[in-house]
Length: 163
Figure 1 (cartoon, one colour):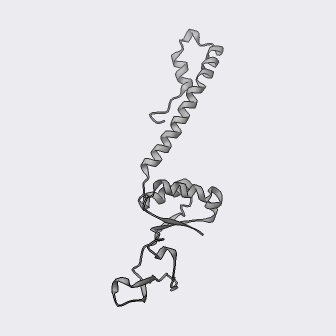
Figure 2 (tube, rainbow, N blue to C red):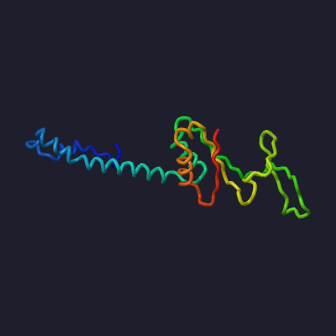
Figure 3 (cartoon, one colour):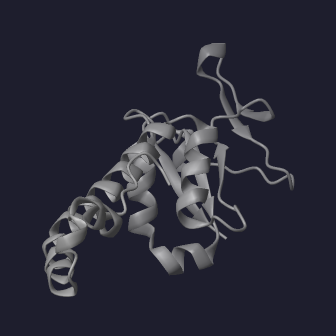
C-alpha cells in the first residue's frame, strides 16, 4: 500500500462510535463514501500518469522504454534507430569544390539507396521507430505517434517502420 492508499471502509468503521455501528448506518456511510472513492481513483490515475511522464523523457533509452512499457511490455520489440549515420558512404558525384560532394549511405546488404527523402536537408529524419505489425493493429498508429510526439524534442523528425 502506498502513502496514498486509503481503505475507506475501514476508515468509516474507525470513525463511527461502537454504539452507532448498525448495518443501516454503515450502509448509508458506504454510499456517501462512493464519491470520495471515485475522486481517489481519479487522483490515483492522474498520479500514475504524471509519474510516467516524469520518469520518461526524449532520450533514446527512455523513449524506447516508454514505448515498450505502453505498447509491448511483454516482448519489448520496439526499437529506435538513428538515421543520420553517413560513416559508411559512397561518393557518387563530386564537383570541384569538396563542400558540394554528395554521399549515399550503404546499407548492410550492400544496396545503395539514392534519392531518399531522409537524405535531403529539407526532409532529413533524425530517427526511425521500428514497431511490430501486431502492436500497430492492437493500438493504432495514431496512439504510437502521440506517445512519441509527447516525449521527443520539438526539432526532431522521425518515421515509423512497421515489420
